[in-house]
Length: 100
Image (cartoon, rainbow, N blue to C red; front, side):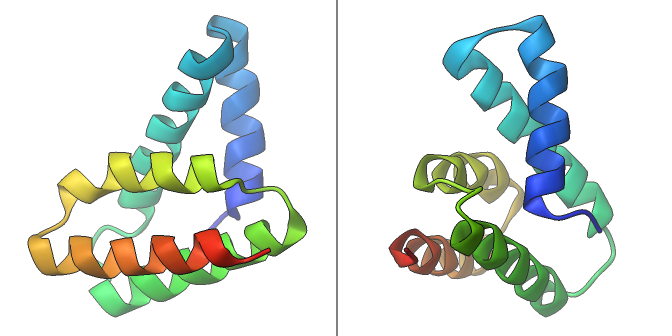
């Protein structure tokens, strides 16, 4: 499993070559969401959430993941979840956004 930083960097380069500005960020987040979803296909909810949290927290502390990117990830990933999972992810997103 790649880190958020690795995914973001690689996807951003690809998307930036095709589009610019916010459109590139949104497309990058969408691609990242799809790759993460496929990487976790068949894994338990707990395993998925733990890994997402660990990678995001590491990237946030390193300064390579912004609150805007976290929110974009949530907006793209949440529709794939049921209500309970969505609430869990929202809670995690809110906690991640508070990390300095």
